[in-house]
Image (cartoon, rainbow, N blue to C red):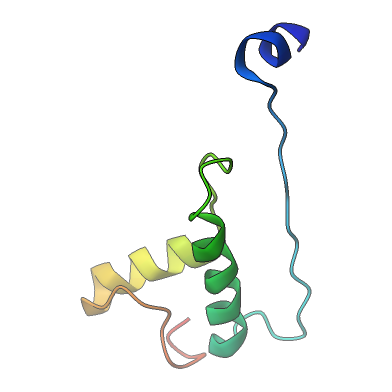
Length: 75
Protein backbone atom coordinates (compact mmCIF):
# COMPACT_ATOMS: atom_id res chain seq x y z
CA UNK A 1 0.00 0.00 0.00
CA UNK A 2 2.92 2.36 0.62
CA UNK A 3 3.87 1.98 -3.04
CA UNK A 4 0.49 3.33 -4.15
CA UNK A 5 0.62 6.16 -1.63
CA UNK A 6 4.07 7.21 -2.85
CA UNK A 7 3.46 6.80 -6.60
CA UNK A 8 -0.18 7.79 -6.95
CA UNK A 9 -0.91 10.03 -3.99
CA UNK A 10 -2.83 7.31 -2.16
CA UNK A 11 -6.06 5.49 -2.66
CA UNK A 12 -9.00 5.17 -0.30
CA UNK A 13 -12.54 3.98 -0.61
CA UNK A 14 -15.48 6.00 0.61
CA UNK A 15 -18.76 4.23 1.16
CA UNK A 16 -21.96 6.15 1.77
CA UNK A 17 -24.75 4.03 3.14
CA UNK A 18 -28.33 5.19 2.95
CA UNK A 19 -30.86 4.01 5.47
CA UNK A 20 -34.49 4.33 4.50
CA UNK A 21 -37.68 2.66 5.56
CA UNK A 22 -38.62 2.13 1.97
CA UNK A 23 -35.67 1.92 -0.38
CA UNK A 24 -38.06 1.29 -3.28
CA UNK A 25 -39.53 4.76 -2.84
CA UNK A 26 -38.78 6.74 -6.03
CA UNK A 27 -38.17 9.93 -4.02
CA UNK A 28 -35.53 8.21 -1.86
CA UNK A 29 -33.86 6.74 -4.94
CA UNK A 30 -33.82 10.11 -6.71
CA UNK A 31 -32.11 11.65 -3.68
CA UNK A 32 -29.53 8.86 -3.70
CA UNK A 33 -28.95 9.51 -7.41
CA UNK A 34 -28.41 13.22 -6.71
CA UNK A 35 -25.65 12.35 -4.23
CA UNK A 36 -23.96 10.12 -6.80
CA UNK A 37 -24.30 12.69 -9.57
CA UNK A 38 -22.91 15.40 -7.30
CA UNK A 39 -19.87 13.30 -6.41
CA UNK A 40 -19.08 12.79 -10.11
CA UNK A 41 -18.28 16.51 -10.39
CA UNK A 42 -15.03 15.99 -8.51
CA UNK A 43 -11.97 14.45 -10.10
CA UNK A 44 -10.87 13.11 -6.72
CA UNK A 45 -13.66 10.54 -6.83
CA UNK A 46 -12.67 7.79 -9.24
CA UNK A 47 -15.84 6.03 -10.32
CA UNK A 48 -18.79 6.56 -7.99
CA UNK A 49 -21.45 3.87 -8.34
CA UNK A 50 -24.85 3.26 -6.85
CA UNK A 51 -27.84 0.98 -7.16
CA UNK A 52 -29.50 3.95 -8.85
CA UNK A 53 -27.09 3.58 -11.79
CA UNK A 54 -28.33 0.04 -12.30
CA UNK A 55 -31.99 1.07 -11.93
CA UNK A 56 -31.73 3.88 -14.48
CA UNK A 57 -29.94 1.62 -16.97
CA UNK A 58 -32.54 -1.09 -16.49
CA UNK A 59 -35.37 1.41 -16.91
CA UNK A 60 -33.67 2.74 -20.04
CA UNK A 61 -33.51 -0.77 -21.50
CA UNK A 62 -37.13 -1.61 -20.63
CA UNK A 63 -38.93 1.73 -20.97
CA UNK A 64 -36.48 3.76 -23.08
CA UNK A 65 -36.22 6.30 -20.24
CA UNK A 66 -32.87 6.83 -18.51
CA UNK A 67 -34.43 7.88 -15.19
CA UNK A 68 -35.53 6.38 -11.88
CA UNK A 69 -39.01 4.90 -12.46
CA UNK A 70 -41.81 7.05 -11.10
CA UNK A 71 -43.61 4.25 -9.24
CA UNK A 72 -42.59 1.62 -6.73
CA UNK A 73 -44.27 -1.01 -8.91
CA UNK A 74 -41.80 -0.38 -11.73
CA UNK A 75 -38.86 -0.51 -9.34
